[in-house]
Amino acid sequence: VYNPDGTEIAPVRQTQTLTLEAAGGEEALVGFYSFDGVAVGNYWLVEESFDGWVNTDETYTTVTIPGEETEVTYIHSELITVSTGDVFGDTEDASFLNYQKGSISGTKFEDDNGNTEGGNTTPLAGVMIYLFKLVDGDYVDTGLTDETDVNGDYSFSDLEPGTYRVSETAVLADDEAGDPTTITVGGETWYAVDDDTASDAIVLTSGESEEDHDFLNYQKGSISGTKFEDDN
Figure 1 (cartoon, rainbow, N blue to C red):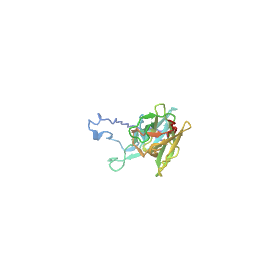
Figure 2: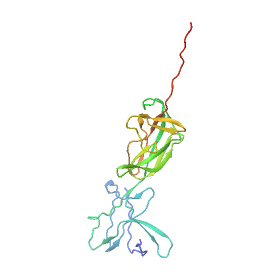
Figure 3: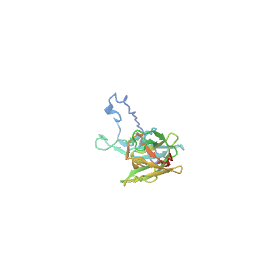
Figure 4: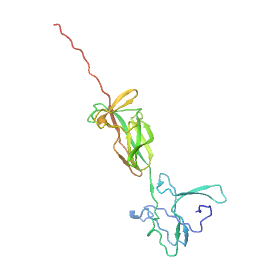
C-alpha cells in the first residue's frame, strides 16, 4: 500500500475474504471484518475492486508505484491514525458501502380489444422507449432510449439504484383529462390503452432487475356498409 505521494506504507498488510465460509457459517457475520494486533501508526483500509460492484463512497486514490510506470487505484477509507489501545470502529465508522447496478425491461404490445382484458396481444417493433429518473422531486430525462426489437422488447441496463419511469413519449405526457393519448409509429397513429404512455414509479434497488413494465396500444378501426332499396 502506498501513500498519495508514492512512498510505501510498511510493514504490515493484513487481508480478509468476507464469505459465509470465512464467517464460520454464521450469516450475521458475513461482511464483518476485524484486524487485530495492529501497530501504532497511520493506515488506510483498502477494498479490492471486484466486478459488478460499485463503491458508494467513491474514495479513490491513484498512485504510481515507485520505480515503475504502473498506476494503481485504491478504494479506501479516510486515513486512520491508530494510537496505543485504540479500538477503531467502536465510535468511528470504518465500513465500506457497495452496490450493484440494475436493469429495467418490458414489452410493447398491440392490444386487440383496447382494454387490457382478454384480448390478443401482438408485439410491436420499432417503438422508441425513453427513460426518466427522479432527481430532487422531479423526473428528468436521462437521455437513454431503446427501440423495441422484433419481439417488442426493450431494456435499460447498467442503471444506478433510484426511482425511474419509462415512457413511450419523449415527454412524460399521460393525459389526466381522459383524452386519448397517442404515439406515431411508422407514420401510423396508435392510442395508449387507459392513456398510459408512461409507467408508474419504478424503485430500483441494488442489483435488481425490474421486468414486465409493458406498454399496450391499439389503432382505431372503421365499419362501413351500403343501404339498398330492395325493389321486390
